[in-house]
Length: 436
Image (cartoon, helix red, strand yellow):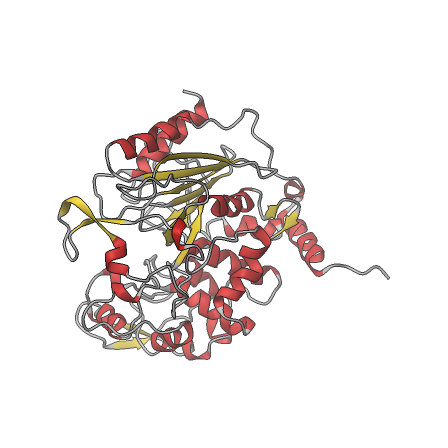
């Protein structure tokens, strides 16, 4: 009797489900990756003082041979050059990593996309929904249960404190249910940050902002996904990610705090705290965050709490672009990887009225390279099926299966409305891809 390796068997099943075309890796680009326009872009950002430095990683399908483009230094007034090994706060670029860890459990059959999360976290079994979100916490029974799919696509009905200051958001603040892992960002009256399991219990005791599956609403849902993985595996979330994603990809510098503080780039806030007024000189975030991202946090935020390098995230981008494969190892079976980067939204639901959403990242549904369908969310100039997401400090990740490259942008700036990152990068990538 032949002994099958479980991973090989699952991969074979996924390949069969995906169809004959999935039996081959994506074709490699016919021309080498260009980076002249991308280099010019980050040089210009540094020259005009928008950021002290930046790093871009570019990958193509197949063997991992990243191209790194760097400019400037890690802090204004400093002399440490920004390099592929500089560490950056990636904030919401944590979300695709968390989501892919969920998809790995979907691949093994331990989770199903349309499975109620209450199967693993029973406190979410009888959820309520706000009757008047702007008026109070009066609620009614939810129309349907929260599923794994809803967590991955921000359609679970949760909210975020950054969404406003309504009654529900005020309760989030009171209970310490915040995006990210930095206690020093809390405002007077905010509750202390809980751990993931306490956060989940608190959320389950509050109404939802919307019925699950009815609309895209940016939320704490990927943090709930981290709590779900803890409950499913019996391990702390950082260990789950180390075992499933970070270790297998060799992402040794990525985690919930910087192991080497000397390599952590400075982050800057360009608006006065609590206002939208753009400052003449930015405030270093380190003054506000104190020990944030330098010690192990209590809240392991899979939605916005990670730090990492361009070298590390390029490996993740490579895996996504290679449809789950990295240097001969299967991180995700190809069928599951394709599913993860496809539109997983419930029928009739869109992100920003025109885009899809996959496992923790936005999916373009049609080609916008000619300027059609531009949105406030940026990402103009994308091909159909491009997948990725950005972070609050200006970081960005995208895998483009049509033009056959992945890109990771690392820089650190918050609240600078003058910086048109998405449009600028899309334009630079178009010029490099088209050889213009």
